[in-house]
Image 1 (cartoon, rainbow, N blue to C red):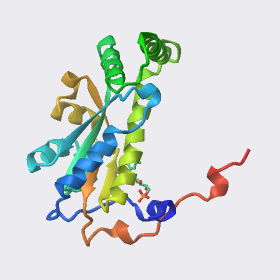
Image 2 (image 1 turned 45 degrees about the vertical axis):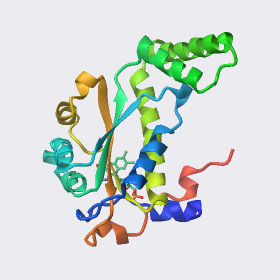
Image 3 (image 1 turned 90 degrees about the vertical axis):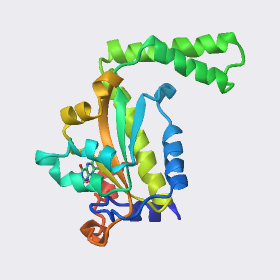
Image 4 (image 1 turned 90 degrees about the horizontal axis):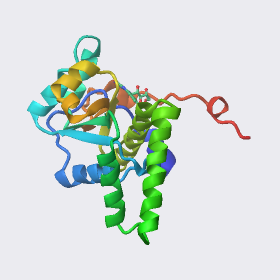
Length: 217
Ligand SMILES: Cc1cc2nc3c(=O)[nH]c(=O)nc-3n(C[C@H](O)[C@H](O)[C@H](O)COP(=O)(O)O)c2cc1C
């Protein structure tokens, strides 16, 4: 499929067919695409929590109450649900883990190259933490790159998806023990197959025209 057809035909699914399941191999390929998402200085500040049982989906739905109740069925009826979380902080241990992986993947020709990477990454983290003062926002920006990755890849695989930003952050943090895991929730994505009752499937797409969003310099 060409990229314009893909962009025009992916859409936010509002109702799922609860009887349909994504094949395991297809879902695993989506997780692998998520794992391969690029990020600033390869910081990978995310964790993707996967719900594939009714129990796990119900835990997430705990946070879809009150003003967010309209999103509950999108989680409960979906085949799989992923909660995109962002790290609350970056510590020396995590930076060392990243460096170890860079090394294992053969990215350093010698010790000096490894040290240069260590210094550069530490410098950026300190810059965002202390000079810019928005380390969490910078980290969460990376997590949202993963969201884009997933929405595109899901469409390529013929899977319907719903990005869900409408949830109670405190309730979701509690339901998934995110505090203890050093994480906060950024966005939820439901995945599966649309129901025949999905009104949004037949609505035309609406976007601002290029004159509003593109400026040629
Ligand atoms: C970060 C983010 C959060 C969103 N949150 C919700 C949500 O809570 N519930 C919902 O039904 N749709 C949600 N949407 C879907 C948007 O409303 C939708 O993407 C937008 O209207 C464009 O329509 P399309 O995705 O069908 O092209 C969200 C989308 C994004 C990217």
